[in-house]
Length: 296
Image 1 (tube, one colour):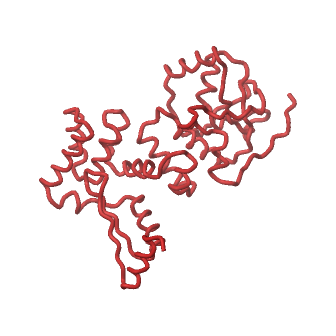
Image 2 (cartoon, rainbow, N blue to C red):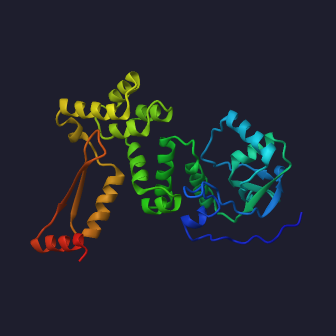
Image 3 (cartoon, rainbow, N blue to C red):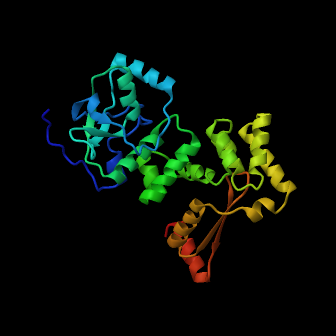
């Protein structure tokens, strides 16, 4: 089968280039801007990525997607690359659910965008695509952000801009990863919401409080009241053991570099608030800060 030459689209330009083909619906239009497929590829020539970070696929949702594909076809093309292990074959970079559902719908070929991604870029795009999924639980979403930061060096600002999220959203999710494993399991299972979990971050008795929240069916506001009451009943415990997460430390470093003085951030256990302390060494440094804050 003859193929048109494949253009190398934007590789090496970072996260924005990798995101260009998998942008989700925007809040303004509520529509996905769908790139035009490069070609139709026989489904038998396409293979799953063996390093796909998403291992589980809900069978009932796959059946729903297959039914939709039977009726309307595949609207969003798969993203594939020439398979490095097989001749005349392609490896999925993004769109494995569509590929699986297309097989269930007994399609013979699927629309695809063909890109020359490296092994590292394949993993990066796979993580990004999983983050964009609407049904992703907060723990998996946070783990996806952490992977992008740890493995590829992306900052929170870069991720927020390209993924269409606020920096505070990303920062709050990353803080959840500091919770005990049993609390994260409750969050993964949907028995706790992200709002409940945020109230527990930095609390010594997070596991015990989480179990009480679930058992009593407390609202987020009631959970916040419970954690505050517990912190007051055991003075010093929540604050003495509370360790700063990597995100807070990074924010302190960024502010310190920008302001030219020591910055300390202390989150209040059981709340989303806290204290920001600036340590200046001279009145001249204080004057510099005043001019900066006043925009002079």
